[in-house]
Length: 103
Length: 453
Image 1 (cartoon, rainbow over the protein chains, first blue to last red):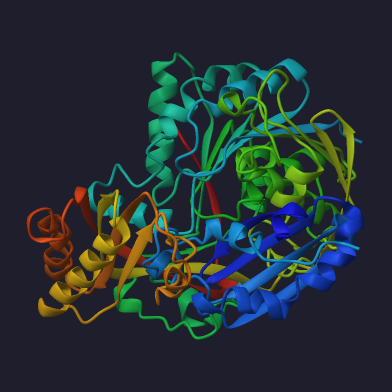
Image 2: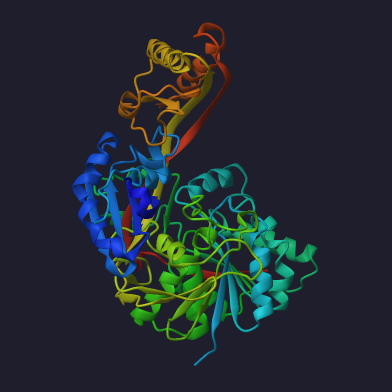
């Protein structure tokens, strides 16, 4: 299954740094998402965008995570050649990630 | 303890819906009691573009939609004592204030008290002589000769001062977005400069409000997954704040959209990096302890914000000329559309290099891989499906305008000397602004409040 079936997300940018807030649709899936959506897997998902670093902050009270990704914006709104220089559509790149179904 | 304060947000960015403030102001007026309206209009680069407008005409350089936003609400705000706080002053708060006074005169509003907050523009000041790197751009290098705009994010204190001196409209240039809400809270509740937890709560509240409908069901709908009723008439947010810093996010009755745990969660983390340390000029906000409660339909209570002492340095955003961006698009549809688009793309790149393009260039196959794609084109290599239609896009960056125009024009030329069946070609060439962020010493930044008659 894909992450979109278990979670919702929103992306925001500052400079060449992107953040994606990711939240479990069902709070009971928070731990499952914590195990599935690791920094390493997110780094791999964004490798084609030149990602150099991923930091995940866990927010258990909100049943969510904040992912901060460096250098995925290929210049950001200042210099990107991408149609979406802000990277606002990238929340749905994350939501397309394949994950194991919750047990 | 002063009574509850309501703050509505009528604009979340420059380009937001012009009629959004009307329902918010009507709801604030109907509720009675202390209230304020914030209008956020200033993106990261908007100020540099505004500085360019001001250079061309000293009466310009502020939010071009400011009068259109204010016209339908100014009389009601005056009548119900709802001050308006906006960063729509952009590069020219004085001109924005004069325009507001002209509008007031036209509407028959006498003696409107309009204040400007200035001091954010630090070009040519010693604030730029002592720069520290900003966390997101550790390697940024200043080139003072080429600076278009250099503005410090001011805090909420000057806004509060203007309000306490009786301002009915407060117009700022660059300030932190949450300050547009925190300023009225400080003026209303008298929170001290080191009352970190309350300042943090007010900052979190301002952060939730600052993007307008992004907390009330805007930028949220995902049909069948996250449905939003009444998108066309989406309501903008109103916060109800108490003196202890507790607050509830809601929206005007009878408007579309929704306020629930999901909309508030998504906006709470929007553009946040370390959730334990969101740096603002007024306080360092920690949202790791935040708890949300749905206390009624379209009402979410927010608790548990914590504050730490404000940073010693303020963030400054500095803008430089960023060369030229050329973009061109053309569509291919029907049998073999993808192969024809790919051939067109290879041809464009070859022609651009032959013209002397040495800088970056990129192709997109819109409909196959574009906004998720990287400059390398790796995704479209993985996605081999055949689209019914595909739109080829070329984008390139140059230092010189002439080369950007010449190379991008090759997209139009494909209509005759490209692959079969291309159509709908478009192109545009624009100059770019490059912004860098630095940290400057707080004591070298001097905010000031001035009333403009």
